[in-house]
Image (cartoon, rainbow, N blue to C red; front, side, top):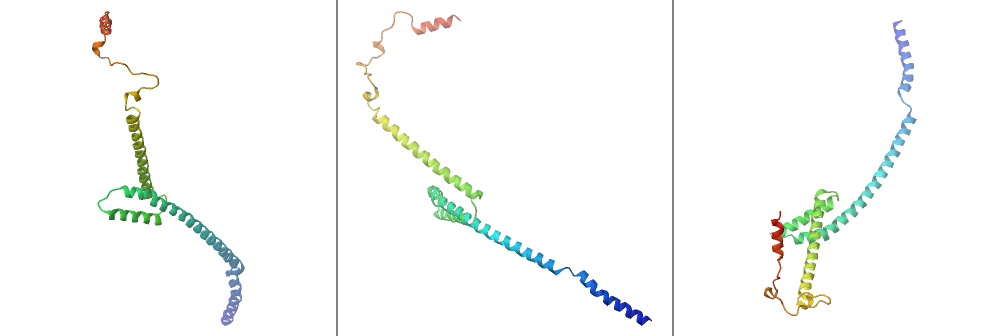
Length: 188
């Protein structure tokens, strides 16, 4: 009986084994559908990433072109105006700025300070030029318009026929202004 009992339990286990195997295995259709959805989502995300990267590169290229333009015009004038003992320093500095343009963004603090410094230099040069023009114009007016006594009289004003001096002014017979002042101060 023990052999029969063992055989019965073995046969029962074999009979139960296929039922347990199907219970443990999930539905393959659901798994495949989920994998397909994940792949579609992945493809959509990769496509969106590629489009965003291309758009960013186009914007970055425009930004870099603007930065390069500023380097070639505004900052070049400033760098040329700065005096250094060795021209290699200027060359190395310009190389560093070109590297900054190619590898950085417009919001970089070093770039912003360089733009501000070169812009300040350009504004100061403009102001200096304007002051020099104004100074030249004023000199011409003083030397031209007001150079002679005749040119300094405007309209119908005529110059005095003779130049008076202190002796030609007569003293008045009454009290002078200073006597009046002394008298008024003395009353207080």
